[in-house]
Length: 119
Image (cartoon, rainbow, N blue to C red; front, side, top):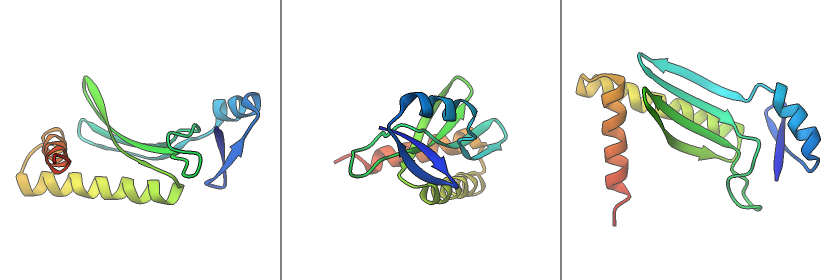
């Protein structure tokens, strides 16, 4: 299912042509910030990445030179904004507490998250 944004609210759009026209000119950026050479971007995807009962329409990604990694996905604009702020705070806190670059801080965060997901 395709979606558009109306005043930061997601609205289903069954007409693919209408959606494509809207998406081609829409500002889908929720937030974008740089910490030195690391870019954190949260955007509206316009396509459901979840289930019909809980559409996942927003995504935060962390971009490093040579690659990127998905950080989180969200159902609503408000959740995406809050998730972006939380990730930025986590990244800055890791940089300060470990006295490392943003790139190294993100590596430590990913390492911890992967460790938390192991059985």
